[in-house]
Length: 142
Image 1 (tube, rainbow, N blue to C red):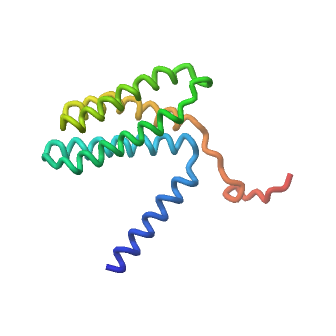
Image 2 (image 1 turned 60 degrees about the vertical axis):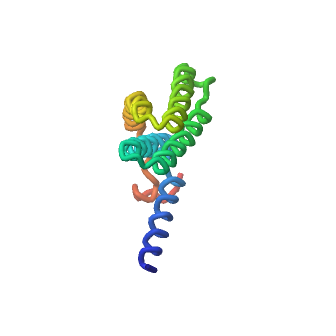
């Protein structure tokens, strides 16, 4: 049991470090990936009438949508208002999916968000990744 606890602690530390060192674009894609994982888990749980598991994943999905919504800067991007509207609709739909135990509402959210997730991944791939000076052999001299 100690080995399992140690492995869990190492995995948690690795995940924490991955988040802390991620670029803003990578953080966004990580949030979308987790959102879609939560929705897939919720859908599976709803199909199996595992309501507590479904609820847990739908509530976590709502927390991610809230974070994505709060991170939008409507002053810097014209598309932010449309995305805010989508997030608002998805939030309402997720709440309804949880309350009514409606797998079709969960599937609707998946269908709406998957193209957005893919678009953010494509956009993030267009951003050049800076190479640390140590990796290029540079010694930091000007």
